[in-house]
Amino acid sequence: MSSADPVTDRVPPQSIPAERAVLSSILRDNHRMADVVPILSSPDAFSRQAHRFIYQVFLDRWDANEETDSVMLHHTLKNRGQLEEVGGDAYIGDLLCATATSHNAEYYAHAVLECWRRRTTIYACADATTASFDGEDPDETAAKLTETLANAATQDSDAHQSVGDILTEAFDNLPDAEHPAEPGMDTGIPRLDDLTGGLHGQDVIVLAGCTSVGKSGLAIQIAEYVSKTRPVVYFSLEMSRQQVAHRVCSLLSGIPAAKWRRQQFTRDEVARLAKTNSEIAGRPFDVVDKPTINAQDVRAYTQTASGRGLPGLVVVDYLQLLAMSQARNQSREQVVSNASRGMKALARATNCAVLVLSQLNREVDRRDDRRPRLSDLRESGSIEQDADIVLLLHRPESKMGKECELIVAKNRHGPTAPLDLWKNGGHERAAIWLGFDWTTMHFNSNAADAARYE
Image (cartoon, rainbow, N blue to C red; front, side, top):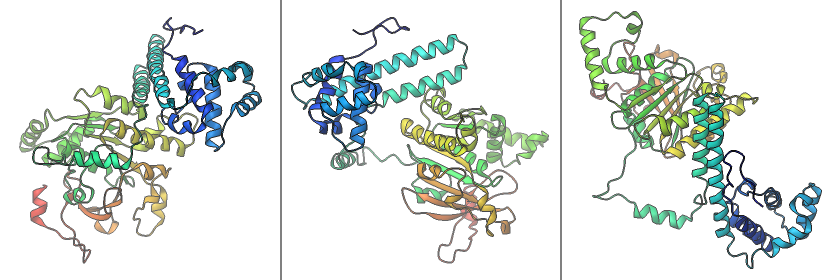
């Protein structure tokens, strides 16, 4: 008999006949696991503890490439001390008779999944209610609730599709005169956009470099450029929102950022600041400067709190600080890996491009040229694995800090190459493409092209 939930005082959604039919189908034909597992990935999908025990046996033996009949099920449950709790041999025998055929296993699994998703939603909301009454941090509670609901919403069987069906959809969606292709978001650096095709939804772009090389300046420039056409959310764990805004203003006005600290402006500069403020007012460019934010908070804010709809670009400055805020008795490498995977999950769930800043490890300092490599990404190789594009920012000492090299070290969508960038010492126009001679590998100062981006 089903018991009422202590929080809601109602019986949670469940379908015991469907659960029995799923287990019966697998017991009759173990090959049905291939149909069921993509739908029911966890024993938690089953409402009854006995059914969770049985499904766990099926999963374990399927992972080991071993079939399970009623005898093996009996012995495995007995060895685990779960046979009596399941109901003994009598219940195993009843399962065999729960359905006349195994052919409908996928249908039964979907029925179980639907109830599981409803229970997950109910329990998540109940937990959030209890946490709120108990005085727990509301931001953390909202972030946990948002993540749980998002996971419940995407727990389905649509993750697999034949290549033929995928290509058919692609051809059906080819652009034409009436439905032109949606371009990637330009970064304001033409050669980078040529290599990458711009920034696209679901992509994670990692911008890495040593300390004080200009990562934040370049990220702010890209964010400002994208905000002309698409909403942007900039998560700053190191700088205040005022500092980010000052940098944006310096970028557009040409007034050195240091003047903001002294608050000493000429009359002409005040006029330029007013013009810049008028230019950027109303732009969909939000800054979140909560220093203890974690990956769940980032996802929750991106999905619900900006008030402008989903952004086209999310910037996280920077990954290691994001990881530190969610460390819970885990190694440094593990928390950075989790944060990196969280950014990939964010990109896929929201269809946003996610630009993540990252530090490099100290190995780069031990090389004579100090030129960064992919292996220099700090603490975790999972950063490289999760990223679709990796950009390494390098400022050669011989260039006196005025020129930078942006190395496209990984590009899942095209070629890799080094790009020369120019850093104006007078203000925060952090990186402007001037031109690169790929045959002689010499820096070309093209004044006309430079003027276009000044």
